[in-house]
Image 1: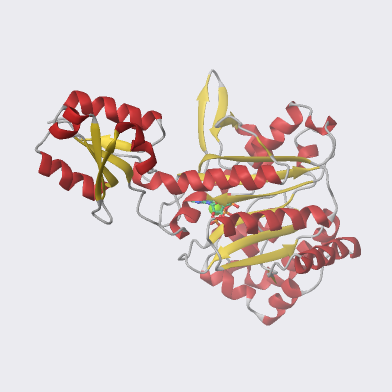
Image 2 (image 1 turned 180 degrees about the vertical axis):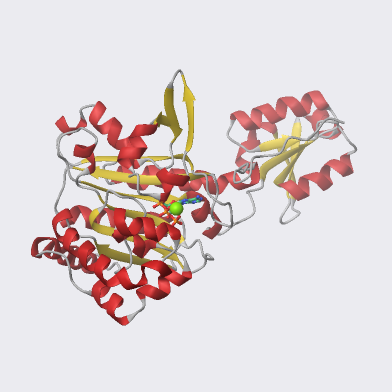
Length: 411
Ligand code: ATP
Ligand code: MG
């Protein structure tokens, strides 16, 4: 026998019995985001590798370890590991800065990262996200966080924690980086290999480290003092305070987590994450933040921006699974031609309908109907002879015989 070819590690089939919740995630996104003025943008799955090197940042794990990169016609291409860089490229390329601000976009689709697969972590996974361009004011930050929370609620997810932080601007960050390097210097040899590299390149990203021995260093009193200290400048601090006021006004509960720095290089000021209490260690369902310099860094007009991305597999695993809806009708008839015609008629009238393709015995067909449908629509010899039809309600077992033209009113 031929070898069986299996699905690739870290990838999955989404099966028909799972798809209704995916439809729900997509439908709710379309509804809620377009209500708030966001238009859907669909960008290509692969882009120039340089877009991610510059747009995500070459000190990030994503760019250093996780990209699916390949060459074609001497061009280096990469399967998108996230979509903010692609959205920004499209924003610039399509001259969207000329539209009146804010420009609001949303997307959904597959992303690719070469990671160690585990629960809640795949190599091909899906994200749904939004990006807003052109507004510096903290009202934009509030709208984005509010939108994320509303969307999660619409999926029935409630047991969530919103964590926020402000990374300040490049100016105030320089000072913080210096302090951080200084206080961590004595512990340099105890840091993990990745953190030793980050120490020079981007010490802020140290705080994101998930290695226990590094985390314990951040708990040392003198290190903690630097992390917990207020390093951001007056303007950044005012922006952050404004955001908190707006979130309070919108009744959104949040906590400030000073260790929250997010994995991407381009963030400034507001960063946030939404975590679920019902997922294991991969508990972040949503990550987002402000990235005011990215559009300019990628060659566009200076345009402030903010957005978020959610992992759809993680949302899926939190959503309540209800058994798929039953058929409206199962046609029971030993005359296969009549059955085919009736099935078509019911489907044409928007009734979810099926029948027995093999024309099995009447009792077998009834058994099947009671398992899969709400109503059995019965076309036996008597019914065919009298031009009538019988309808059995499979929940109450009540059965009636009616004229054919009344069928639709009775199921
Ligand atoms: P994590 O810390 O879990 O690796 P991240 O900071 O890399 O997350 P982002 O790049 O901000 O994640 O992506 C936003 C969201 O996408 C995450 O909160 C998560 O829900 C989801 N996500 C990220 N990577 C994966 C993955 N490999 N598999 C499934 N979902 C993922
Ligand atoms: Mg990651």
